[in-house]
Length: 115
Image (cartoon, rainbow, N blue to C red; front, side, top):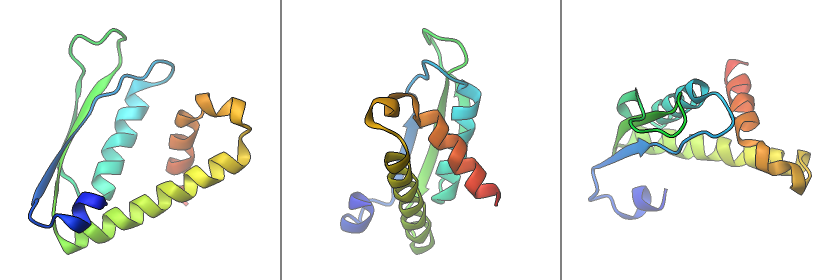
């Protein structure tokens, strides 16, 4: 949000989401990343298998976000939803259980989107 609101001269942001998933379903994570990029208005969103991955099933997700008013609205909305989900996660999970929760947060985000 900082870049989008303060540097309007930046017209495109190219995303490459490539962090490996150690304990989980790389396909599900890639699908969630694709949905997240699309939800903020990114285009040319696609996933490819991660080359030279130490763990099979990991993907690199690419996308391009263009500066436009409707994309700013979508970005603000997506950030507000992610922040709300994170606050709910912190309230529900004791500190010692938080390290295994990112995949649960993705699942919660998907369930919320279906309702």
